[in-house]
Image (spheres, rainbow, N blue to C red):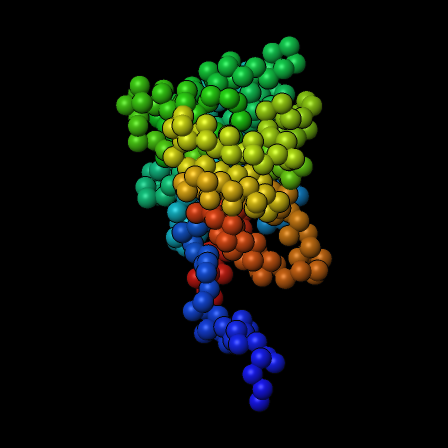
Length: 331
Ligand code: PBG
C-alpha cells in the first residue's frame, strides 16, 4: 500500500448508497415549490385537450372546481390562472380585461369561495383580450407603452377586486410595476402581492401556450419590442432591479430551462424570492420525447424541476405541477 498513488478524497464515497446520497443532497423539490398554470373557458360540460400540450386540458367554468380539487388535496400552494377569452370578446384595446364579470374574475371568485386557502395568481397582460394577440395596446402598429400601462393598472385592480392574491404582470411594459403598486396602495390594497415577470424573453417556447389561448393565430408580428432578447443577461438584472425598486415582491424568469443562468445571476445578486416559468414549449418537448419512448417522463420531469431549485428558484410555474406533486407524495 503506497500512499499517494490513490486520491485521499474520493467524492464517490458520498454517492455509495441511497441513504448517503439523501444525507448530502444540497437541494430538494417539494410540493411547496409548485405553481400550477391552468386554462379555462366559457360554456359548460367542456374539457378540451391542448394538442401541443399532451395531458393539459382547457375546462369550462362549471368544471373548474372539480379540475382544481386534486391540486388542492395534494397541497399545491397556488395556481396561475389563464382565461381562454372567446374571439367575440376581444378588441384592439383589450377592454374585456377590465370587465368585472370577465371569465378571469368569475373563475377567481369561484375558486376563492371553493378553496379559500389556495393562492391565486393572475396574469396581467392584454393578450387574452386583444384581437391582435399582443400584450399591450396597439397604436399605429406599435405597442404603446404608457397607454398599455393605463389599461394594465385597471386590469390589475379588477383582478384584485375579484380575489386574486398575487398579480403577475407578464406584459414587459416599462413602469408597470410601479404604476400597479401605486394604484393598489391608493385603493387600500397593499396586501396584494406582485410577482413580476421581470426577465421575460421573446421566446420560441411559448408556441403551445398561444395555441391553448387561441392568441397564436391572432398574433400580428412578434413581441420583440417588449420581451427581452435571448442574447442578453446583464439586461435581465436591470429589469429585476427596476421591478424591485418599483415594488415587486417576487420576481420571475421566463422561460425556464434555457435560462437557468439568468435565475442564478438574479438570485445571487438580489437574494429575493425568485421564480421560474417552465413554459409550454418546455413541457411539450419533454412530453413529446416521453410519448415517443425516448426519455422516462417522470425522471425527466423531476430532474428538470430540481434543476430550477439548484439554479436558485423558490418555486416553479409548471404544467407538471399535479403530476410532480403526486410523484413526490407517493415516492
Ligand atoms: C402572455 C403570457 C405568455 C405566457 C404566459 N403569459 C405568452 C406570451 O408572452 O406570448 C407563456 C406561458 C407558456 O408558454 O407556458 N402574457
